[in-house]
Image (cartoon, rainbow, N blue to C red):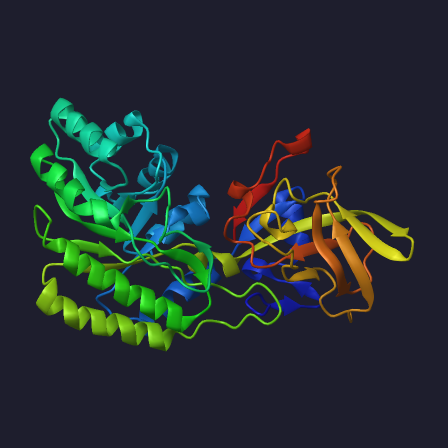
Length: 401
C-alpha cells in the first residue's frame, strides 16, 4: 500500500502525521479520504481513456457529502440510487442534467422528486413508466428517462454479478421493446440506455467483452426506441486489488476497446454520448479506516489486538459484505510503519460476536494499547455499508484530507 506517504514511521494521510490527524479528528475510529488520491485516480483515467468518454461517479460507493462535492468537480456526472443520495448530489452543486437515478425499488415519491429536480431516471420496471408519466403531468415538467437493461449476459470474473439471468435490476432485455413502446405512448422524454452487468472485475478481457456486448445490445434495441439514443451508460465494473495475488487492472486494453466503440458509435449511434459509471474504482484506494488498540490479549498462544472499531463501522473489512471465503484487507500499524512485522496477530473489534475480525492471523509489527491500526482500501462501501447501530457502540467520523 503505497498511495499514502510515510514519514518518521507514521502514515501521512493528507500530508499529516496519523497521530496528529487522530488528535485533530478528536476520536477513533474514523475514516480518512485523501483528496490527492481521488484527484490522481481521475487524472489517470482521463489520461488513459479516450477524451470523449464521459466519467460518472456512482456515489453509492461513498456518499460522504464532502467527498461527493469534491468528486463533482472532477467527473462529468453523478449516479444516485435514492432520493437521499439525490439530495446530497444536488447540495454538492451537481447540475441536474448530469445526474442519473438508478435502483430497483424507487418509491412513487422518489420518482416525483426526480421529475421535479429534472434528473435522468433509469427505468427498471413497467410500473415506473406509469408513475413518471403521472408525475410529469401533475408537475407540468418533462420526465427524463432511460431504460436500465438486464442483459442476457454477465460480467465474467466479477465479484458481484448485476446482470444476466433472473435479476431485480433493470428490465429483462426481451421485455425492453414493449417497455419502450409504453414510454412512447406515455410521453416520457427518452434519452437512452443503462447497463451494469457486474462489478469488481480484475479481468480486462472480461470487461472489454462486456463493453462490446453492451454496445451491441444498445444498437439492437435502439431500433425500438421512441427517440434517438443520446446517452449510453455502459456501467463500470473496474475492480481494485484487495487481497494477496490480486493484480491491478491494465487500463490500455479497456481504453482501446472504448476507442473502438466510439468509432462504431459514429455510424450506428451518431448522437450518443458513451458513459463509464465508476464507484469503487474511483474512491476505494483513497480511503483508510483508523481504529485504536484498546486491549492486547494472548489466548492459547494466539495474540489478539482488540480495537475500538470493527464490523459496525467497516463490515466489508470483516468479510461480511459479500465475501464467500474471508480474506484480510491490507492492514498496518499506522504509527509503526518502520517497524518490522514480527508477530502473528489477529485484530478484532469490540463487538460480542466472532464475526468482528479486521485481520485474521496476519503478520504485523508488535503493537500495544494506544497504537493505531489502519485498514487500507477503505474508501468504498465502508461507513455507509455498515451496521452503525449494532450493539450501540459510538459512531465513527469521516474526514476529507
